Length: 254
Image 1 (tube, helix red, strand yellow):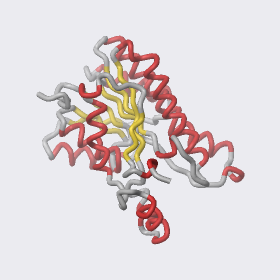
Image 2 (cartoon, helix red, strand yellow):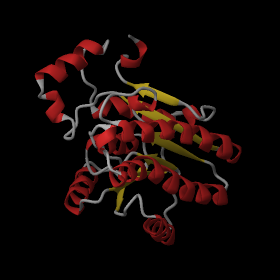
Image 3 (spheres, one colour):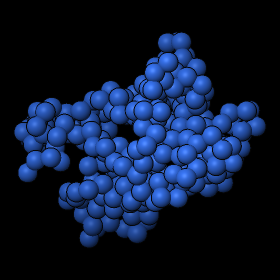
Image 4 (cartoon, helix red, strand yellow):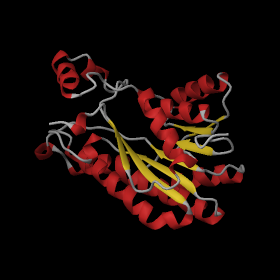
């Protein structure tokens, strides 16, 4: 057993039927955790569950709206009824909407904020209540972004949400650390996923990324695995309220 061993722990990773979430779920499973996959698309969720199950991992799945408080409470209640308690929560699910602020509607703003920020509060709060009640501590890992610290045009609502995730993480640490709960965040840089593939395929944007990033490449979902395992494991038991940027050095240079 090592300080990175997650045997006997259960991890819920939202938005884990594909992309970054799936890679992190697989990484946590490889470290020994039972993982609960989550997604809204039932076909993708079933496929992801089948893949990890076929690899010999202990995998469950759940589907609920991360912005719906009643749906969250019901899903967690169902898990608890089955004797499943969450030791590790990874708030990964989110969305992007590119539009100038002056053209952004109130409804669009609310959708982005609710999906990327309010969901982390709602799910984090409800899971923390269970962790505090059990008295065994736990880990909360929120997925932020480069936009947790900097801004770019046309993603104002997303930037506000991800900046909020960083400070929400600090607030969670301030209130839950005494209960043995460590709350931290990861700020991914530009990662190759199904959602970003059009940007990868754009010669101008791709050239900007590879030129702007000291590592001279895009990140991959697998680049997040080491960090999420670290933050989910006993290795980070005195790390709280931090955000770790996994960005190839982009934020470190002008």
